[in-house]
Image (cartoon, rainbow, N blue to C red):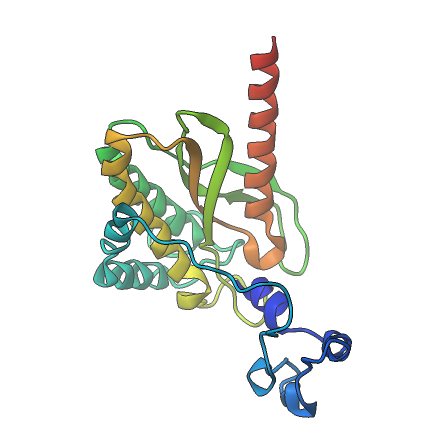
Length: 249
């Protein structure tokens, strides 16, 4: 999430100067005191570029599913993750109530339980790999584990839609893997949405499988270098290559 915000808003003055060539540059105050662009001060988005986007109409079934998100459940999930104290990628994995180990075990239990109404069409798992030390953020060798649910598509399983939120957290001092790092909005909030997606989609999937595959994952190692996301992508690529090869034989 932090990286996305930097991409969207953390731009330099160069793009604004380039934009001036097309007549829609922001005024000199476009860069705020914090060094980030203040698009609200300019004429953005430009009206002379391209054609207006026309929103797609949302089908009633999708609207119905969106209406099933439960704010109270989301709040409870966030608070539960906060209560693990720290979820630093290098934090304890042996304590049953504190640290990333306790958090990922709880997430796996939750996803497994929430997936049950799918009648076996949702598969919950916790794939891990051994990550060598990368000081100062990872001071020793650890296991990076993602917690995920996968739904195999019925028509084109090779096409996959992925939703992720990272469940690891950090302090300003990223080498501090002991003290509290609650990480409520970074990024327990997105993980709460992941669990709600599993809960809401499970009974739907039991009746009708989606055409494409879906992965809903809580990834780890994001704060250090997107380790969990990279692991998910590489694992999925390997599976797809193997699936493609076997179907060509």
